[in-house]
Length: 484
Image (cartoon, rainbow, N blue to C red; front, side, top):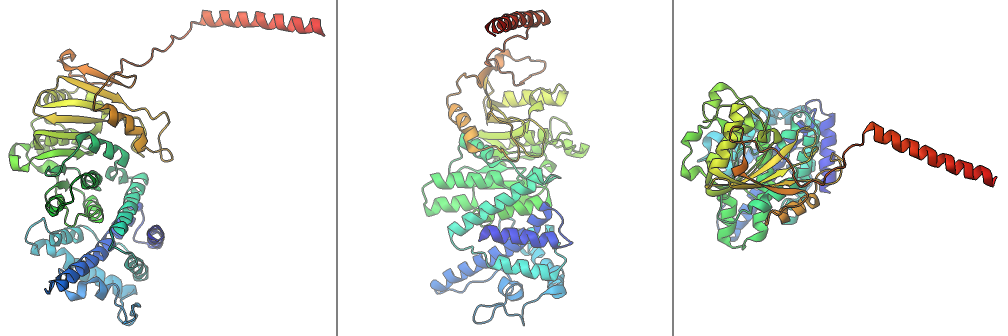
């Protein structure tokens, strides 16, 4: 049911002249799903209040609630065609009344960590791109048929939403920046092992894949007490995101995973001066795949001790500064970070090694990130003590990876297991930082344990073998003639 509904919505968006890419499809699906979810949430809270003999105060005014503008129904539960807006009337209501009203919550909300503020943020950043009110009417009716009540329903919806995010990444353009392969995220979380009571942060949150997977990981392993559940909901996951669509997708993704009012702030993380970060703004666990290849302006670079235009290098400085003493991080970064010879790269490697224990480097194969032809590594480090030795693991799934052969959990199983003891194998080795070149602080991936390849033969050796084979062939042919 869910899968067909999502597919049918995409088919309608494909036909509409206002939405022309996977990015538009998920953006438009998101705001409609959000309002459908919000209605279900308000109904649940109203039912709970009634059971306790109380009156629930709705967030939305009557005219802007889902059952009034989207799906007014007759007493027998059918759509009331006399009341339901459609065609140009529906688009006009959504564009000129619904969106401005919802965007106004940003100013009216008490603080950013409320669902009211999230409503305001989402509808300040998104625009309705569905131009045909008849298409919009069809989509709204399909969304109305989706059940949100049970945890099983929400789990299936969140899984499908993740699939849409993955498809958006596969669609090319700038969609890939939102999607990190979930098997890689799960491996990073298993190694950092966040615990209840710790704060988990992603300053480049994108579709919130790291926070959603960390939520699943912690929820499965914790005692299900009321206090723990409240801590997980309200005081555990934090994120920042600069881009409008990514912010909305991240919020929606966390909501579908069960976090009612996600602590995601819509802001440019790199606009914050790292010298101003206080202890209460630091985190126990940081998980991220910051965008790389960007060129930040000079005024942004002034917020950092090591000046560079490379976005990912600025994020890495932000993450180091944002970790509590003893805090753990797992950060995806381009593998050229390990060997670049410019002053900023050398200074940043030196800073990382001196301020943190860079205990593990996971070398990822090409093709890990669909649509991005870059090689990446994952840096695992703990803040507080300088690095003495670094364990490398070179991931080799034994196949070419791509859209039809993506990374899976089995590929990373050995890494997660071996990382606990960090042994020497054909795929893994330890590098002593005492042996590092102190001019370059080069951390390049150089596996000393690969089996030695046989040296190539010289032309003379090849010709000699050919002559030998010719002689053997002649002897065989001569023997055959004698038999004939």
